[in-house]
Each structure stands twice: as C-alpha cells, then as structure tokens.
Length: 268
Image (cartoon, rainbow, N blue to C red; front, side):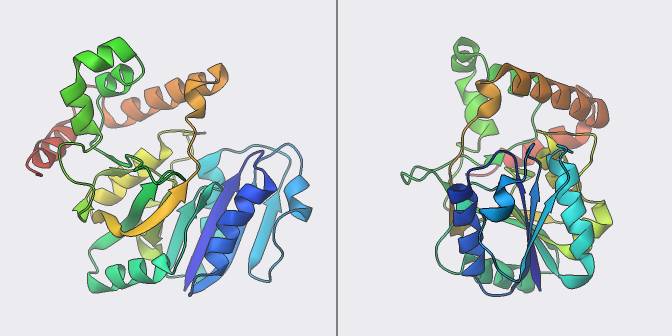
C-alpha cells in the first residue's frame, strides 16, 4: 500500500540505516527505494538487506527531485501512498499508521507531514508561509533578519502553535507522505530544480487543490544541517533554484501567494 523513496548523496551507512530501520519497523510499507546520487556505490554493500529494498545507482548525480521522480514512477502501480524522506531522518513507533488514518478520514487531504525534532528534542521549524524574494534574502543576513524579526517569525509559523494540525502551503521536504493519485495529478517534482526549492514548488502545487497538513500527533527526528549556508557551491545552487522558482511563480505580482499568506495571519 505504501512505498517510500530515499535519495542519498555521500550519506554514511549508519545514518541511512537508521532511516531504513524506521521504515522496516512500520506496517504497510511495501517497498523502499534507495536512489544513490553519490559518485561511488559504497552504500550498495553497506545498507540493510531486505527483500523490499531496491537500490539504484548510476554514477551520476541527477538531482534530488529527479531521483525521487524515478522512484515514484517505478512505484505508481504498487502503492496508494508514497513517502518522500531524507536519508537522515528516523522515528519510533508506527507513526505511518496514524498518518494513514488521517488520510482515510478525508479524501481532500493530499499531503501530510509530521512534527520534526532535532535529536536533542528541540523543535525544527518545518512550517512556512509562501516566501517572497525578500523573505529568503533576510533569513541569510543576520542584522537585517533582526530588523524584520516579526516577518521572519510569521514566515516560520511562530505566530501560531506547532502543537495543532494545520493546512500549511509549504512543509519542509524531509518527510512528506502523499497520495499516489495526487502525485500523478500534479506530476511529481519539477525537475528544473536540481536541489532546493523543489519541496516548496511541490507543496504549493498540491496545496492549490488539496490540503497539505502539518500533523504534530506524529513525530520524527532529523539530523538537519543547513549545508547551503556552509558550502559556497551549494549556496550558488540555492540561488539558482530560487531564481527558477520565482521565474515560475512570479517575483512580486503573486496574488495567490498574497491571499494565502493573508489567510495564514488569521491563525492564532
């Protein structure tokens, strides 16, 4: 019923094996795809072996979204739901059962994402409003960020509580459970995004037609590291993806973004 895909890039075996073990401990997981974008296939012999795990490697980094699309297209006939997750997340208990029950309660739910914690138990701010170019820029410049702290708090949903279920237009893509039919309808990830912004673009397209829910009754842990803030070439990729995103959705004259964000301000 449920297929999961993990895209790895130079991921340590013990890290991705935590993710795989979490999935194997869950009910209803039919298949796990591991797509390795690394320059070598070291993971082939280091990841957990199980009949439901399918490892793919082609000695070429094709990008995050394109690799997930490969897995999604391979699994469409075998699943009703697809989980997109990072290789550095893990969870305890059968959270997938709880998410599945939420989907089954309302056919208008297209996507569900859990509460995300750092390994030390601190909350990761995973809900976002639809960003303007200015929102993205000010988050990277500390002294400007401090001047616009109220705006930053709104963008990260700190104007409301992370302890309630909410329809959120942009949920960070480290763990997204999506109806298969919805993925087919919207066409999966837009492959023009090599890395970064692809989760925003996908969530936004789904949110146009369905609810994209943050569901804090389920929790995962994420070994999160903002790599683009530390490595210059990843920063350049981030900028490139940002330009592509705003070229697609509009830089300034985006009435849909304005309407959605105005409605989000009503949350308390």
